[in-house]
Structure formats: structure tokens, C-alpha cells
Image 1 (cartoon, one colour):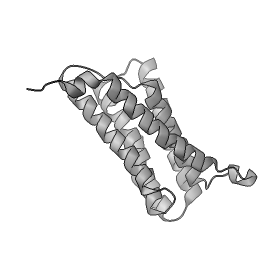
Image 2 (cartoon, rainbow, N blue to C red):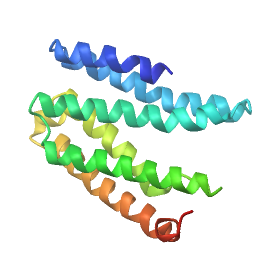
Image 3 (cartoon, rainbow, N blue to C red):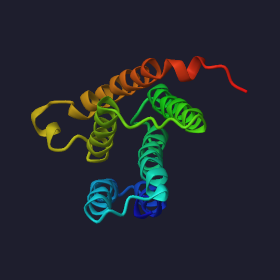
Length: 170
């Protein structure tokens, strides 16, 4: 819930032009993902609420950041469309699978995608610091990596679960 509550604060701080402060908020919000997962598993507190809200909070945080970065002119809209379309498609696939009693677990490429997206957002918020000092456009490299991993992971989910996609409904 901290990640979700941090989103409006992050947006307001960023739109006020406080890029580094917004990066700190984003980093702290992103870190709660690993922290709450560790706490839940170590204390055997895994709940249906957590299973639903954890990935949703990630998606809300990352897509909010990317949408604001489109508004500021730092990310191309088409890249964010790819990212959001993948998230909606996989969420839809998981919903259909769940209705059939099938759980689609997060795959390795999906986790890599999330890490690439978060690193890209952080570097964009930090205006490519410290890489700008040595002339490496790491923010753009990670943005492209995020888009590529978004496409790869989305394709992987669909291919692995094609039987759910093509199953005849009621």
C-alpha cells in the first residue's frame, strides 16, 4: 500500500520540478517491493490481497512514472503505449487463466522487465546522472532495454499460455 500511496506524492514532486527528490521517492517506493515480499515470505504472511496488490502496485508506480515522463517530453509516447499495452494484455490473460483455475506465475523475463523499467525511470529522473558525466546515455539504453524486455516477456507469456488464449469459453 505504501507504493500506491507514494504515487501521488511522487507525481506532485516531479511536476513541481524536483527531479532528484522524485527519484528518491521512486527508489524508496520501488524498494518496498522487495522489502514487503521478504517480510511476507519470512513470516508466512502471503495473502490473496498481497498476491493481487503487489504486482498491481508495481504496475501503477511504473506506468505513472512513464506517463509523467511522456508529459515532460523525456520519453516517447509510443514506448509507453507498448509498456501499458503489455501490462493490460498480461493482466487480462492472468484474469482469464484464474477464471479457469490456472495461476500464471511471474516469469524470469517479466522480473527482468520490471527491473529494467525501474532502472530506466530512475536514470531518467536523475537526468542520466552519473553517466552523463562520462557521456554514456545509460538512461536511453535502459529505456530501450525496458521496451525490448516488455515485448520479450509479453510474447513469452502469450506463447507459454497460448492454450488459454485459444481455449473455447462458455
